[in-house]
Amino acid sequence: MNKEEEALLKEVVGNEDVKKADSYNIRKNGKLEDRKVNPNINIVTKEDKSGIDVYVKEDTLFGTVNIPVIITESGLTDVVYNDFYIGKNANVIIVAGCGITNNGHWDARHDGIHRFFLEEGAKVKYIERHCGLGVGSGKRILNPVTEIHMKASSYMVMDTTQIKGVDDTIRTTKAELEENATLVVTEKILTSKDQVAKTSFMVELKGENASTHVTSRSVATENSYQEFVSNVVGNTKCYAHVECDAIIKENGQVKAIPEIFAKNIDANLIHEAAIGKIAGDQLNKLMSLGLSEKEAEEVIIEGFLK
Image (cartoon, rainbow, N blue to C red; front, side, top):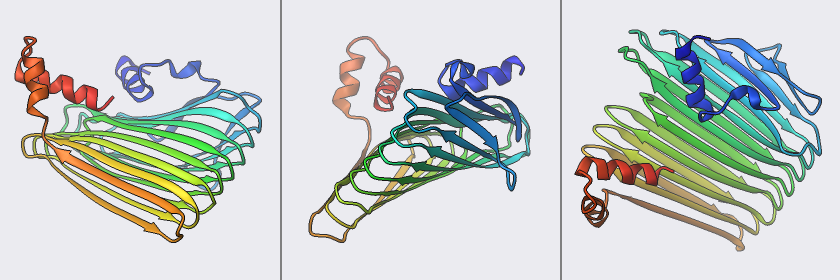
């Protein structure tokens, strides 16, 4: 990889060395760039379509998997289907995401379809980052799809971040939880210029005492538009808390569409949404310390999206 590609890769994995993970799969411009596996975590190329299967053996403790994707070719459309099979009582951290540098005039696009299958007692922390760079007029398009199937007493944390520079994105997350399973989702999105970001969460709490907590934090600036749709279904005794907090600046727009469906008298489902501009007292406090209004806004937004 050249220096530009290495810098893009670091943006995706959060400035970490991707090759320090127990296992990794690096994809560049639609092709495998590099891979490492170990006895507890195996990565296999799919034979019937583009993508990989990741197998984590049961009882694997504190395993790490990095599967970043980078695109530097203008006009390229890359689609991958990645499946993750997490064994019983395994505990693993998975870092994924895509960075696009587009210096040309054609659109560059990545669609990543990820499916997770957590066995009983399995634990996963899933970190996904997306960003767009480059000076070309072609768009940077990212459409991640995540499907999650959680067996009894499994636990998953999903932390997703759209850092900057993505022109269009449709982000879809679907999950079904069996008894005592827990799903915690945190989403952070920043849009500017004329960018559009749409998010859809659909969670079905199928088993008794299943629970989910979904938090979306977003900032829409200039002429950008964001849309957040959540749909939580409680079939039995269960708990769900969905919250959408957004800041708008200039002509930014944010729409929140909540839907909660309790199918049982013991289903406890909550949705909260708050959308507005930066509070004046926050700005004044920072400006009293010598910051300009623009600098104060940047500090507030950075803290809001942490």
